[in-house]
Image (cartoon, rainbow, N blue to C red):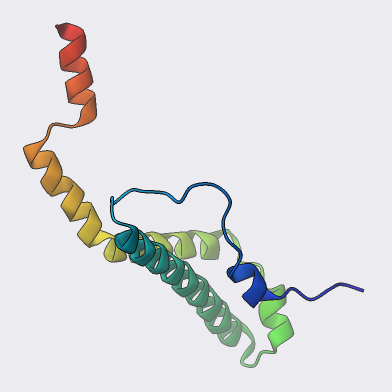
Length: 119
């Protein structure tokens, strides 16, 4: 018999090791972590909705078992991949633009490395 996972307990486990520090502010790090978790959850929901829509188109009616058994074909997998990439690009547009703005004032690291090598 398979034991059922206690997701609330698992979600509240403390991670091993030091927390990542990309932003320099623990509160901003927490917000980033929450945002990334929500992005992941929405991505899963979008894929599940895509499954429901495809099954309804194909069969007209579906069950939970149909949803759980569904395996996308190559074309559906490619469409889903594109859908998720577009979604992540939209969500991450702000941080991406912030990085681009920094690069306007600071040269990319590789440029600095190349300059130092050349002397």
